[in-house]
Image 1 (cartoon, one colour):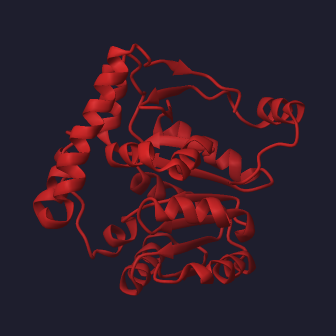
Image 2 (cartoon, rainbow, N blue to C red):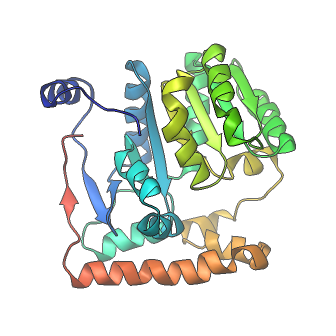
Length: 274
C-alpha cells in the first residue's frame, strides 16, 4: 500500500488546503464517497493539480462481497482517494440503510469524461489492460472522438507479474498524467496499489471492461436498463455460463450483508478527515 502523510499535522494541512472533507456512507464495511459525477470529476482535477499520485476505485455488489474475504482488496478500497458506487445495487443499499447517495458514478462514464478533459487540458493518458485488439481499438476510437488527445502509451493486460516493474517504468517514461487500468477486479486494484508510485502518474482509475465497450468489441446495456439497475441482467443473459455465479450467488450474498448491517443499525454516514 502507498504511504499517505508523514504526520497528522501534515495531513490536516494538506486536507484543509487541497481537498474538501469527505462524506462517506458505509456499505458492508466499505466507505463509499457520497458524491455526484460532477463532484467526483472536480475532485479528480484537484488531485491531478497536486503533487504525488492518487487513485480512485469503484464498487458494485460483487466487489463489496469479494472485499469481505480478500483483506488486501478491502484495504485498497478503504485507502482509495475516491471510492464511488459503480453498481445500482450499492446505491439501493445505501438508501435502504437510511443514508442515500447523491448519485451513481460509474467507472466507464467517468473514464469518458476524464478523457474529454484530458484532451482539452493536454493531459497525457496511458491505457493498460484488455486484449491487444481491445486496447488498440480503444486508442483509435478515443483519438477519433477527441481532437488533441495525447495518448502517451498503451499496453494490453496480458503480462506476467515479473514484468510489472518494467511496465511501470515505461509509464513513467511516457510522462502520462492519467493512468487507466482495465484488467478486471481485483487484479487492476492490486496492480495500481502496488505500482502507482513507480509510474509517476498523478491519477489512476481501474476501469474493468471499459476498453471492450469503447472499442466496440462488447456492447453496454441499453440506457433504460442502466437507469433501472439491470445491467447485471443484461450481462448475465449474454454470458450466463461465465457470470451466473457472480450475479446470482454474489447478489444474494450482498443482500444478506446489507440486511445484517441494517439489523445491527450500523449503517452510518462518516466524514473522516481523509
